[in-house]
Length: 136
Image 1 (tube, one colour):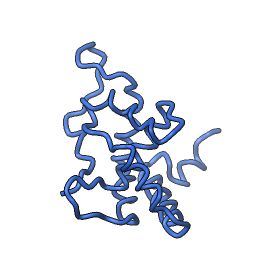
Image 2: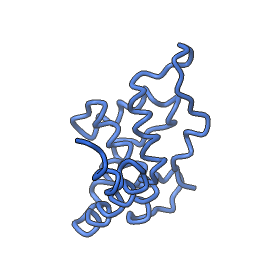
Image 3: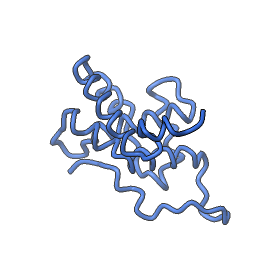
Image 4: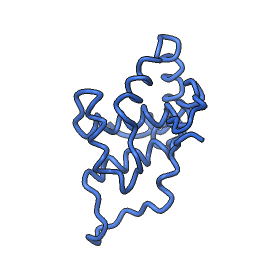
């Protein structure tokens, strides 16, 4: 069984002051990625494992991107997501991040780029027509 992104089933944005999570913008960024299908799009072009505890590589890449938003400057900074564990669940390990990045070649990077572009188009305000219509 792989670890995917079913973490946001009960996610609510509220200003009530209970159960707050620091860096909530990172949570919303991750939720946006999931809603546009970014992790699943990545998973379609990345290799899948079969071992126990295998992480979906798309989820690892999105988690790494969120970590960069939080200020990461190295792969070991994936640990910044520990503060999000109540919302996002477990974080990938540094070795999982390293294995994921090590498996990326030119061909895979091109397929990832296409998956990213397709994901952006699922977001209504990100479509080329919407960009032409928006001022600035």
